[in-house]
Length: 513
Image 1 (cartoon, rainbow, N blue to C red):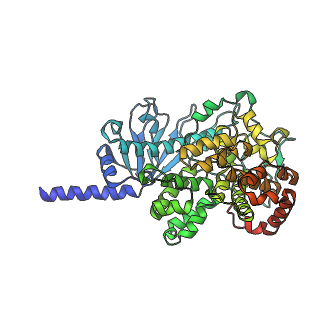
Image 2 (cartoon, helix red, strand yellow):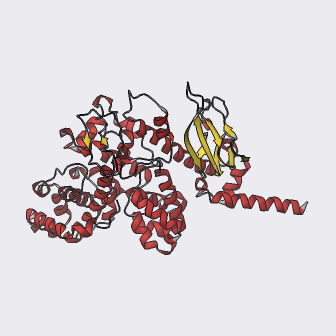
Image 3 (cartoon, rainbow, N blue to C red):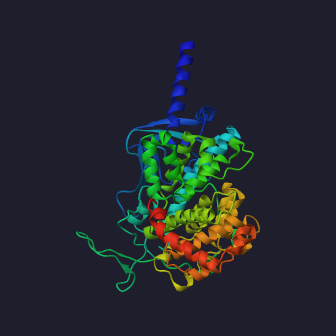
């Protein structure tokens, strides 16, 4: 009897260690995994075995622990099903059945021998609240990322007949556009749209912009506020994600924490996720964390890598700005440039602020990622901006319902960013409204203006030297920094602009795009 019990305990320990390697369970401790296993069932599925049958009803949810399965759909008039997507280790499927009793909408078939955890709804009633919260957090991340991907990829397809190729694009987690080819989102008339130069050995491809959103379809701010979820997946700079993944795969991140921190600090979403983790109740901090390096020290490099892995994986299926790479690159470039210029302004003016000015600049436009998820046709217009987009903030309100400052403030508040970053995000276009933290707001407003004037912006530059000289931000700086009272603002703007021209290569040279 003793030997049998010991063997059982060893098997359980091995199962727990095995689950720790699956991305879905990152962040779960041994006790939580043991509880999870008690309300789950292991399945060993031979190849070509049907796991889920279309039009059947059940309440089980599955996690693919090892192996590969395919999702198939039988279309009317077709003799054989089409394959919609392939799922691999760490993916989940059948999740809708956990919250509703709708019939299954597709078959799921094992492509190889697979090991699967079948989760019954009893996890809700038999597990402790902490396990439930972790489980549903990870569950919602997977579900939201898939729904968000589907919304973005079907945006603008109204009137286009559904076909297997479209279904496959909408439901595939692995399909991401390359840098060389842009998505053809809408049928293009022979005399409309833009043409790209033909490449050797390839036929010339034609792209067109999606239609501008309808003003009549904009929503009330209160309704949009409810759609902002701090745990929802957001797009990550793919170049940064690729280098981080390479580091973590080779475990170089543990040995080179400085480079790890530098890479994280090149992306606003990754930076926020690290800070969000450090400010979570788990670490019980008396004071809020406001810098990436400090957040990394608090949570540890190993946990940082887990957070990065989760964020990158969740972003894998997302397309920022409907796959228009030029708009995406402009967004990420602008974020880093504004952060660096804001820090330069602080040093040149010699003004003190408790906030990390670089991070303030890096995250100031986070709201654009939020609004892009709500209205994926809006920001691609920056490729050829119409007249009404000259004032971006007004256009966002007119066509979506809120501007990116307000949407970003909702997100930052949910994430738990310190107050200076919330104020910067909300008021970087309206510094006169900043009643608290006016200095970081003013510096980021000016950095944003300088970056836009130099062309590091989304769309066409709309800011002039005169606009910067007349900015209300200078009054905020003079009010909070007496030595600046005697400074000739127009002369300062001219000299600082000249200094930016001299150092522009160092400001932008190492940005991964």
